Length: 329
Image 1 (cartoon, helix red, strand yellow):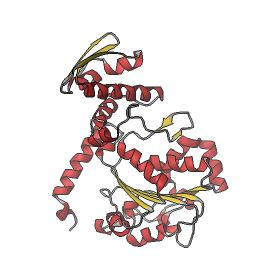
Image 2: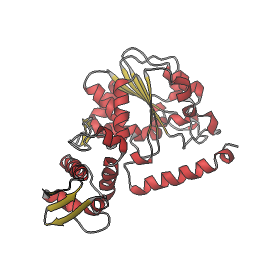
Image 3: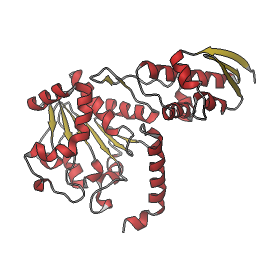
Image 4: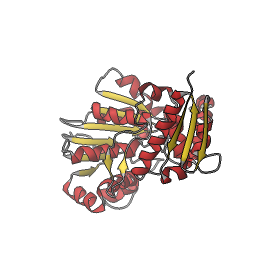
């Protein structure tokens, strides 16, 4: 092995995130790489050893610098997640010299850049772009709904669709829509709040309310979708784990000319009386032969919330796998 030595000068901002003290610092992560030595002096990082490992560290630093420039959060969990992703065999196979930098989807109303943060999130975005229907399963915090909303707003801004249709089942945990007070919008507001929040982040409160009045954004409970056809629309069905096969068939056949649909759900959080009634458990088996339908599975590795969320998801998955038969009785 031909060993090399390099000195990398870091920006002040990046230096604070990488060369700080503690076990969670970027420098300590770099030191875990075999066949590599790393030490810091001031804002300089001195590396020696395997050229491939040095190239990987450069991609790591470039990625973090790009995140800082786009005003993205760069806490210790994010630093560690980027570091681990760069060592993923899937990433190494397709790695480019510009580091783990995925294309921007859209900017928020406040000007913050929104990009995928993991390989599977980028795969999710690619599937939405290339497919008529994208069906994504994954735990909380993986960006299922948020990224779908970003893609919907992007398609609307680029005039590829003329409206956004948001839908989700509103009969959850035994509560019926008809028993809730107020008109239809007031009844469904609590259920659609996560979708409201996402769209408002991208277009602002004023534009959101204007689009609602004009019908450019439509909030439609799943129960009211029957008999309709959505042309030139970007349809998002959220919380799909709470739909039956009959309901799923109904909404998938609402798709009209020039439209796209994203179906999101978490098959571990089914609120139906019987878990086995969830359509999300069977969709891939039913639709796998249809080329215009894409399936994406996000996992705890794609969680972009606090690190403890990933650990909680893993613990639940282990328990559910061990006790699946008992829970389905």
